Length: 370
Picture (cartoon, helix red, strand yellow):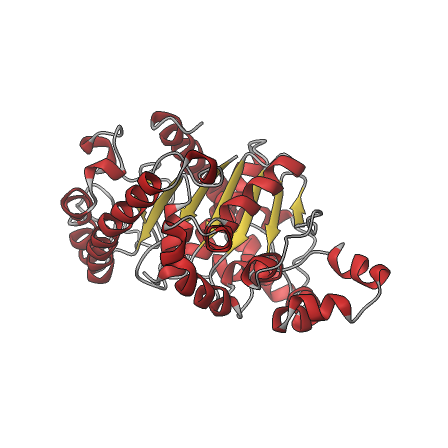
């Protein structure tokens, strides 16, 4: 199992849309993939599941999120088996570690999206787990067992799901924050990628990420030097590697004079991002990928262009864009007419995401993560 976080310090760049379609593309390539929604806003969950599915999952968990052990004691073993034997949110799964309790031996099932793609939904209450991380962080350097259980819980859970269900790749959707939750998620991932909007804010976001990575790596190296080997089992052997970045949602202009065929304003900002990457991301965080390659978009121009309303329809009908023209889920006649009118544009997106996924896997292999 290899874990990949999708992260940018700027919100609204399309992380959840990218994560969903990347996960679907990997699954169609035969790569068994698990998506984990660790953005408290739960946008990935909203993309993949209906409101009714999310509400059903959350409602049955409420008392467990308040006090896991008390909620478990208040019901019979059979009732708990029913609750725990159904798909649960990531916060529910993390809750025993948060509360200082023993983790359950059995895992709740993930939500199956297709035969090779599954999801562990997010939950708005993840700030409670982040609060616990903040309190336990310094204790983890001393090897305090409860602190280490909390700090390594996300990676440990990812590995357990991979071992039980055979997931080869875990994609983690994150919030735009540089707080302790994302520090732990990203530092404990094998790799991460940065989707960027072609604007000023993404450039500043990369600068912020680079500065944070320097601090996070020092903390990681310090923790690894202080802990005995017996307490490093659930930590990665190396600090996370940047796999690269891509422009996302750039406005395509076939008449544009620039090489990317995007609007001039978007090209001007996109043209500045390679320098931002090499200037601010520590080289140790992407080596052995060389500087020339890290400057290039993952997958070239495969997914850089915006899709207008197409992602909105994908979310509405819980299908990747390329399946919508043939999907029986598109029940609204107006929507069906709109989608059929752009049928070729919808189906073309599949090739783009497959190319992107292949390029991403090649970079994983390049840094020794295959």
